[in-house]
Image (cartoon, rainbow, N blue to C red; front, side, top):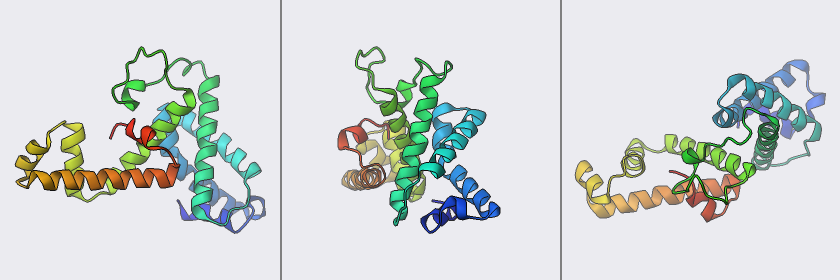
Length: 198
């Protein structure tokens, strides 16, 4: 979370100077832009949603004593504002990119997920991509080989000249680490996590 947003832990937004209010806004902008843009794929629309969700946030924000609680609340506000925008927009009505979000889901399934679930999973997928970028290069390479290139454990072991059991162990640790980070950030269940493309 940007340092500028942390000022909201110790002060009411309306009590801050104009300069500091502006800094808080840009901290908020930096914090939520990527997730919102990932969903709507349009810079101007993303900025409109950010402005609307920021106004909601500063008018309804409760007092927080922990950064992670405030961070989670901010994400909920921005997510809900994005969902509301998609529901109202003709451009996005009846349009969801399920194929890029779900694994092994029939596009003609009668039980298609709700808009809320679709948005939540897209945002979680964005979080996973962020976690993957923070991994050590050798772990990123393992994930690339296994889930993007579809290589078997044996093929990966041969390519990297390491034992197959080592490949399995490292991939398992990486998956479990990502699940824990997702649970900490989103509080979601394992079925939801499993439905996201790694």
